[in-house]
Image 1 (cartoon, rainbow, N blue to C red):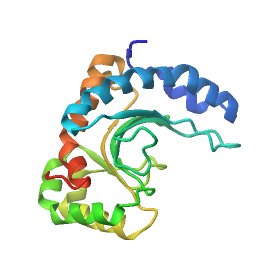
Image 2: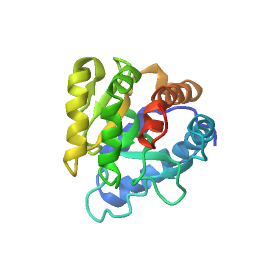
Image 3: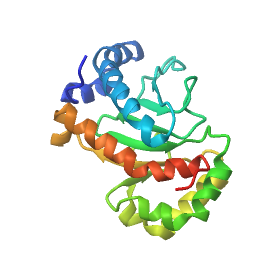
Image 4: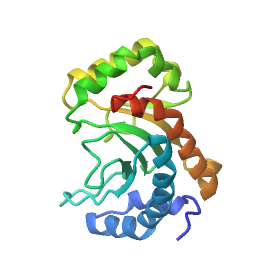
Length: 211
């Protein structure tokens, strides 16, 4: 199918009660869109990333009682999984779409990645536009803009990411359900690609490449 954008029905999924009922709606309404946009974005990222990029769609397989509060696709340079690798995410909560470059707590190389960021903090700070937002826990909706965080706050956030086992670092955009960007598939795809390409120097730095 072609990706034609997100609708209010996609966000309404998270108001459906019951694990099986909500998962059925996610599989029916959202995952086909994730497959369509994810394949396009993964192909588009291969050249700037310098490697094949593989699409993963969250299955929420470990859940047995509580329905998911969000759902997402991930794009990583690994066919088997993404959680232990720097990766790109597109996903939904009930009140926004998120577009992230994600470094989550399962990363085995967190300390080295954080130290690379701190060694090149001027480059990292300049790469993140003021209106981009950062989150430090992928399970929460909270995010802070780079403009508000500032370089000093960014340093502290990266140090916490390095030193606290469960700390995470996610950088990108939040888009509200009413934003016209979401209503047009081509427009949203371009915004997602622009976001990821803007953050590509940080992605490459996390892998040990020159920013």
